[in-house]
Length: 81
Image (cartoon, rainbow, N blue to C red; front, side, top):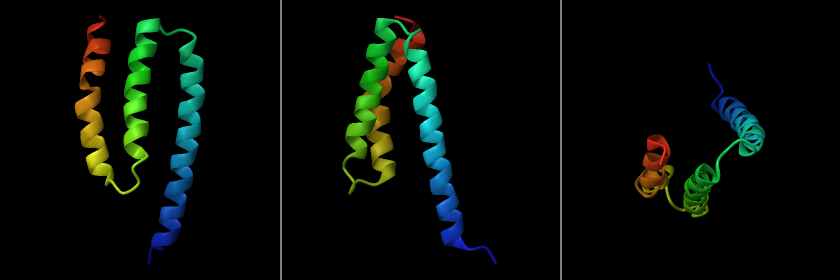
């Protein structure tokens, strides 16, 4: 029988490790990003962090809000403008 707390604990460790990898690769990418891309990235990241700070809001709602608010910045980055 699978122990749910062990699975959750392992998943927590994997999430933390992935966040650390994310920070490392983004730090390396920043040096090669245009100012416009940095501005859009910061806008999207700021929205995500601000929404996550509301610990009472379910993750589903956080992601819906981020998707809606970040869509213009993502579209600009994808179009290269």
